[in-house]
Length: 268
Figure 1 (cartoon, rainbow, N blue to C red):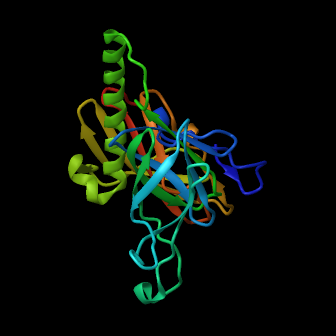
Figure 2: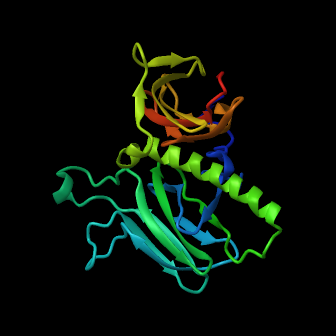
Figure 3: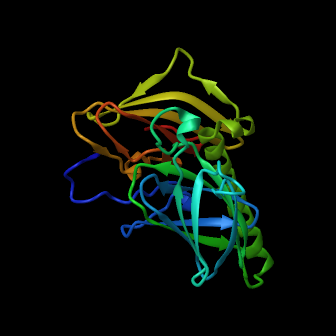
């Protein structure tokens, strides 16, 4: 079900299974990251988003970061809290000379590398029309005590599966990564899938990798009221992760939705 604009409050989305977009009712995105890995997280277009490391400190940030002298074209404004080892980030609007129009931040993903005392990892930050919240990164493997071989083997297998889900979602969401999992058009053209009476949900493309199927949908608000999307309600049998570029849609607006399911699972 979709909440309209006078619902009690915006339900925090579950987002990607296994921690990709996981949040709580207190507007916290809990994400699992690994040293040298890339993970997607959500940032607000209009508010600052806080980034902190669970039981650790951010020591530096690199990438598409705005700097008036060194990188004036950087797309992410970053404020460092040296005392607490945290970051406060916000997408930068493009300069008028670059756009010739309104200074509105782009919704294209922004990639940054976060260096911490528990490891270095990359974040693909997806700007969304949402309130600012806190991203809490749990660095998997950071200062981990030795474990029995059997347990280590199990964790390696689980981690490999998580990484495959993340990689497939990244390939669907970012055109520059599409070569990792080439997409296929739907035979006979896009297919509309029954969802909610307030929405049109259309399957436009599929991606396949070993054991996983990625599905790309366009979700359109066909009602006369603002729509707040709760991604948890898109989870069904066999679905491993769900992500939407935007969680709030005005009447007539559309957002892409990326779903990853087990290759042998079906059903909506």
